[in-house]
Length: 181
View 1 (cartoon, one colour):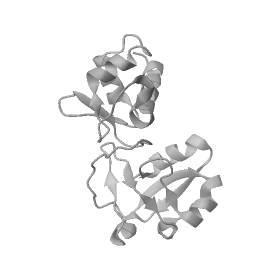
View 2: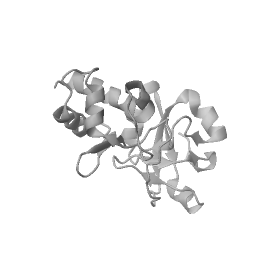
View 3: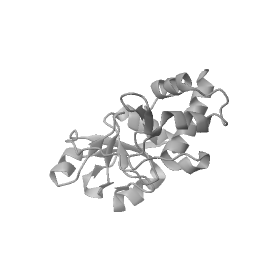
View 4: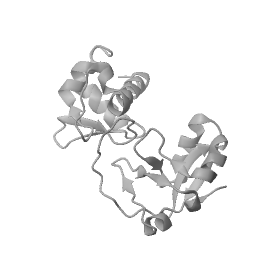
């Protein structure tokens, strides 16, 4: 499978596992899992020849590690970023003192007033490293990187979670915990 095809399949899996499983008649359980065999059979019409080896390649090579198998690889789900109701069942954890959020300048005034909101997703996504935040921010234009004082926020009673691919999650980041450039 070439890189272009891997990316196309990955984007399609993001759509069905995070936002619209019904578009291919797929059902997710309450924790976002679906059967691997069911997924393969329902993705097959869109990508003829799609099989377990291809799915494993997409999961292993996705640059954002968006997907995870269960232990015996009979189930798969997206690690985060859902706009549909799922309970990822992540336990609260102690965050690092500083996390980063990549955005673009046109949102700075809104964020300064209201903080960082999860919008249509289940959580606000934050990164532990500056480089990841830059990549995220540049998807929509010139990146503005916000520093989130996550440790201080946690001590004030806010919960943090971390997905298996290292994305830090929280429900909302109030503006008083954000350092603007």
